Amino acid sequence: MLTERIAACPDFAPGRWIPCPPVRDRAAWDTLPGFDRWLYGGGEAARAARQIPPLPLHLWLDFTQTGNRARYEHAYFTRRRLLCRLVMAECMGDTGEYLPKIADLVWALCEESAWQLPAHNSYIRDTPQLPLPDTTRPIVDLFAAETGALLAMVHYLLGAPLEKAFPGLDTRLMREVDRRILHPWETSHFWWMGNGDEPMCNWTTWCTQNCLIALALLHPGSSKRVRAGVQRAAYSMDCFLKDYGEDGCCSEGAQYYRHAALTFFNALEILCALAPGLLDDVWQQSKIRNLADYIAQMHVADRYYLNFSDCSPLAGARGVREYLFGKRVGSPALMALAAADFAADPDPDHLTAADDSEGINLFYHVQTAFAEAEVRGYHPTDTGVPSNVWYPSVGLRVCRAGAFVAGFKAGGNADSHNHNDTGSVTLYKDGKPLLIDVGVETYCKKTFSPQRYEIWTMQSCWHNLPRFVGPDGVHDQLPGAEYAARDVEVLPDGLAMDLAPAYGPVPGLHYYRRTARLTAQGLTLTDETDYTGTVQLSLMSQEPPTVDGLALQFGSLARAQLTGAVRQITTETLSITDSRLRLAWPDTLYRTVVRFTGRLQIRLG
Image 1: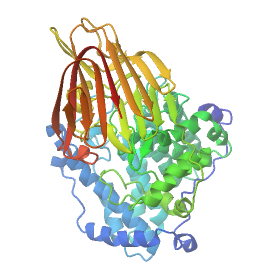
Image 2: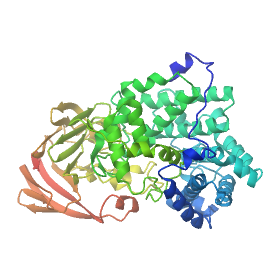
Image 3: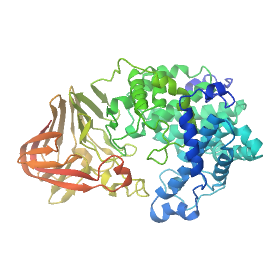
Image 4: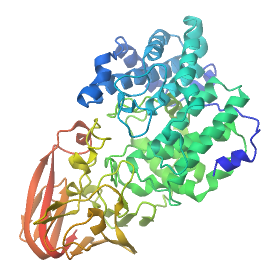
């Protein structure tokens, strides 16, 4: 899509990408709505920056020796978040007050042995991480690229005063970004850059966006270098787009939208500026519009989203980037969702986000600052979100009826960030979670390793799915593209499919037909199978379940009536202690296990 347009005019005259007015334009900066917020935040950041978090060797080795990646990353991200806050405060005040602390942090980042995370310290995709970084061969991973973009923005905003106050520092900054980011990007091939039919993920657009920021801000006058960078980025983004269907569905789930679709948006905006007129018509492509709209379709109510794979049901507040993407493609639904979230967000700059990696992209802060007034002034009359949506590329059905919102997942078990969750159902009533997808625990060494499916949250028995128990043992779903639903039928009010293939060969199992329908009265889930053993159907909930004969009461939220060959219904509590899961859930969740044979119907409303 993009490559062919660039190829049609390879000797184009590069344009300039200007992320915001320069700091010397005080009329632009002094009138920003967030002016006082950032000045206050600068004082807090300056106090916190009195002690820059150290990154000693033992923290780097924590990942390879213990599997823990959080301790190193906390210090790593804190450095970058402090730098963003101080730079924004200095740009607002324009007094020089924060330049010494900014200089200390820039120096600290330049002195780091590596910008990639220990968890990403490998040169070949999906291979074991090396114990220590090779400082002669920098790796461009997600956060190395983020660091390059951050320092490039520091150079654009404050390079001149930093160089005046600390001669040589801005030159050092530029040299480190060139050495660690731009030169490797220009001369090496990292897997996320795309290679034919190899599947890509959010890494592709996320890294590409930040490499483009660094190139555009550090070398705006190098026509040859900019043209080559545009061609390279266009190829990578085409590799990313090829793995999306025309429907624009993100197989990684709603929480990854900001890292996938939104970084695609910003990368394309930068490309349009660097290659004037060559890519402007791309915004009118239906696939790009659908890519933008996806997050609005997945929204349930307030802070909740339909989730699957490694996603949390709390996929994050929408904001300026979503609004601008919606504006670009003409999506009132996305603009309305983003404007409403932004207006209600007590921390629109994400200065106190629970996710350590939030708040480290300086361009996002600038983008928010200069679009805030427009977003707050947007008052839509019609959001335009449809009742039911079908995403054939992923096998995802979203239905809305009355007080209910449901997500039905067909597809298979080879998605990026996959859980073995083919056929699972999530359900909300009155905007509250009823049948839930737990999500994923804090990332550790095992999360992205051959031992991934030893983690309980990845297993089908901890989703709203059956388990087959017979004399030969217990059977859960298996990971891989071949373990997928078959005979999928889209219904006017739901979805039907056969889940048996997702479990691989199971003696005595030939089919497991699941039919899920949603009406204003609630969800009707009908499961039919020829399995000769016992089926154990799990129902995950936040509401405490109470068994009353063949009925289930989920707190005060809803009641389920069961019919069929039910042998036993049991409930169990699940203690939630992991810090990442606790962001979304209380300290106790529940699993109800329904044992049956042949046929089971659940009416839940």
